[in-house]
Amino acid sequence: MTEARAGSDSTAEEATMSREQQLARAFVSLSDTLSDDFDPLTLFHRLVGDCVTFLDADAAAVMMADARGGLRIMASSSEDATFLELLQLQSGSGPCVDSFHSGQAMKARDLSREEARWPAFVRPALKAGYHSLLTVPLRLHERVIGAVNLFRHGVGELSSDEEQVAQALADVAALALMHWSKEPTGNDELVTRVQSALAAKAVLETAKGMVAQHAGVSIGEAARRLRAYAERHQVRLTETAQALTSRTLDLTAVSLTPPARDRAAGP
Image 1 (cartoon, one colour):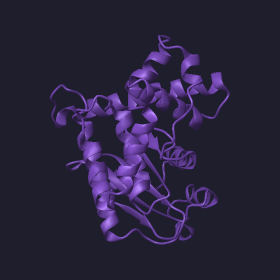
Image 2 (image 1 turned 180 degrees about the vertical axis):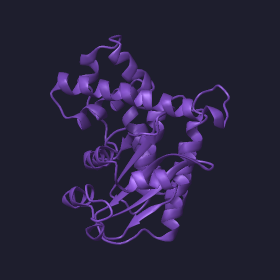
Image 3 (image 1 turned 60 degrees about the horizontal axis):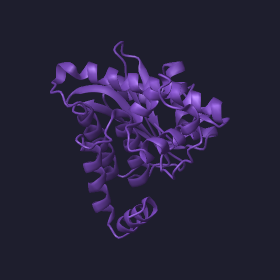
Image 4 (image 1 turned 180 degrees about the horizontal axis):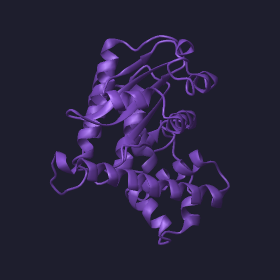
């Protein structure tokens, strides 16, 4: 079976599945740490994609804490979402920052009324077209390691059921992070796992910059080409980025790879 035929069959199968069945498959995919392509970049890319696909959200982003307690962007579904996360990091204020420090979900049914709460965040969010949001903590048991932002174009709130699904998706992703290495670990190794994920993300950012400059494309487009190359050659995205930055992978080969259609902009 050709790659195109396989993709077509997969799409047809998903079309016949109920939302509940598709969501169940998404949970399995997030928690499948034994798959050959599993790595932390894939994990959080799937998380933001699933949030946009299954919840009433137009964009999503994940931030994780480094060893010093500072937040770093791990994945986003759009360049607008990445920009809004950067604003929070620069100002030290915003729903993701508050959710991380409090361990609680943050809600804003109408962002135009939240300027006193998040002065550096609200106006850019509104300008980008987002008028409400939900942020849930990314946690492992009682330990908070980051937060997941869900941005919405309309005014209003997600239903209680969707809020629970959002938290469940975040919890499953955090748990999967602890098991992405084949070496056994415990809660005391959480910092090591998180730092490994952040290090992989840093390498990816360098690789994206290399592809963007070489091909003369945007960072978002560079991310899609990197992912397409990794999928086409059935290698982990982490390994692709590492090979590119260490100059053991031909930059031209990656730069010329046409991107596949993807629901999230990139990790």
